[in-house]
Image (tube, rainbow, N blue to C red; front, side, top):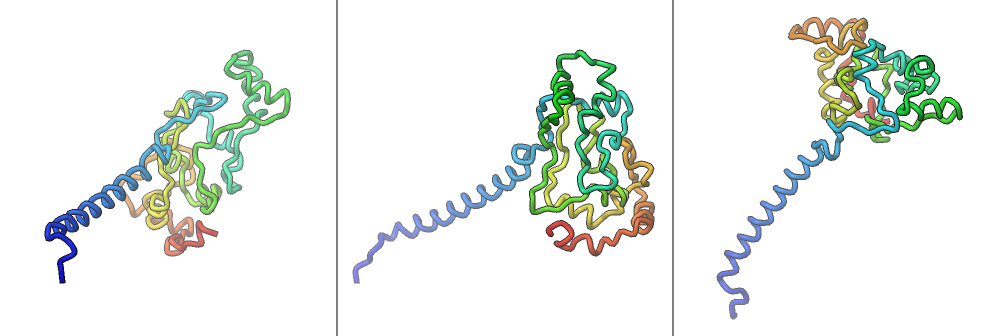
Length: 217
């Protein structure tokens, strides 16, 4: 029987297989890098807002606590966006004619709430409750970073499942005294025994925190 393929095709076929493996590997590596990059996660990318609100000025400069504006953070699944009248508590008296704050004054006059662009936006299939984290000793800075250094707000963590699971599996590395929840400068240090004591005090059952149903309901 005559040979169908030229002997040289063996080299071509082997080279094709090797090239295919290389291409797939490169695509997987590049895709993984893109998935974790700021291009897709928006980590480190300041979000432009209709009103250029500066956490740096309000938190660091004026010493305003997170809970003053995000009033429901201790009792609700959502931290809450401050209503316009909260802004006007101060800005009816100071900077009350500044052009940059005209959208705030317009919102107050018309009763239409300001539209803010979300900086931290979990997908709908992931359930997150702010209050349970705050009441179990997770500080604002742990997830949101040093907002007291942000003239415009950006995310500092990917919010990927692997990032969440690291805390769920090792809560002793992240929990803090409840008096330090709103602190931007508190450090856990290297004493993990203190963290383990807090885990016990807060009745955190970390064996259950890796259960899928905790976040996917």
